[in-house]
Length: 360
Image (cartoon, rainbow, N blue to C red; front, side):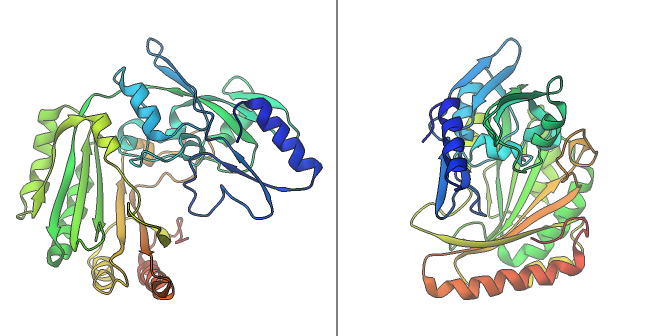
């Protein structure tokens, strides 16, 4: 449990001297388990939470134990934000170093696009600064490169003005899934960069609905006009879209079932369009889910931040639908059938993959 850079340097030296495997933990949200290791040393940064805001310069420096919800609370006191995901307990550092996507991305970019610099400790214990003007190659790699370049102990960000937003959920009966997904695919082809949209089939345990969530970060009146077709093309079972503070929207987010100890298995991929055939696959597999907490989530990425190369290591800039297929379970008897269902779902969508972004 490190509290400063000196602790991190000592931990690295200890691991090196004793030939130990190292893992680095911040928010602890790595589905692949990179924040833990067996028979090794975990360098836990979760106590390093210092946040320094310069509201006039619109910059912030965070230590790497800071979580998304904690950062949002500080920056929103000044009406400012960086693009963060919707789950408040995700560690900002790990999120950013992997690229970092969220509801502000189509308008303001990924988390790594707002990085101005970072402090990093290398494997030989050196303390370095990385920015456009210092250790530029390292700064290039840190922005979305994910790789094992060292332990980042703090990150500097550019902040953006973000006030009230239009956000909420539209819930449709699951029997209308094909109609809704066909409409959504046509609708998103012309949406402005202020609109973020995400569709989830079977969004919560026991809730057999299709959920379309939106966040509009532009002028509210224009947002009402843009969202009107989505809200009115068929009768919705529930419409919670309203004007609310951005912080309220961020604090409402979650990434998994909220009660009990859950295991999960998931795979991800990318579709350029929702064709009639791919929609059939989505609907057919949703109808045979093995547990109450399983489904598919589709996020539509668009506009320049999501389509044009940048001078950084982040490689996933693709217009289209990022999706992840997931199954959660508590009963060990559900493990094998969850794996079979997710693998089969992924295989069913394989003919429609964007081949640059294979299922993983």
